[in-house]
Length: 67
Image 1 (cartoon, helix red, strand yellow):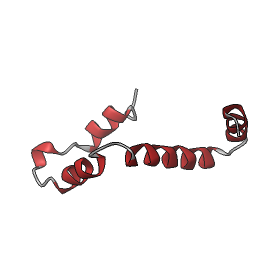
Image 2 (cartoon, one colour; image 1 turned 30 degrees about the vertical axis):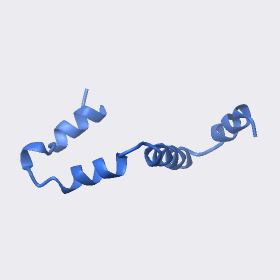
Image 3 (cartoon, rainbow, N blue to C red; image 1 turned 180 degrees about the vertical axis):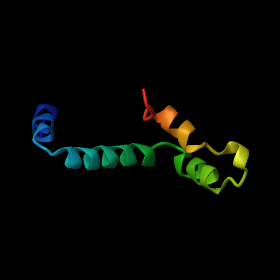
Image 4 (spheres, rainbow, N blue to C red; image 1 turned 45 degrees about the horizontal axis):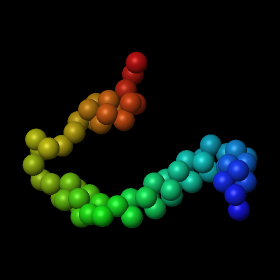
């Protein structure tokens, strides 16, 4: 299947289906990054509150805050 055919198929997906496809593609990329799983586990296990983000900081970094 060509990239053009894939693009055409993706255009026909619903917004929800596209979000699921994007999440799947990001997950595949993450699996192939050396050390990603270990780095993520370290961050999840970090018990030091000074390293945590507030909801507002997270939204700002993700570009989700009010404009």
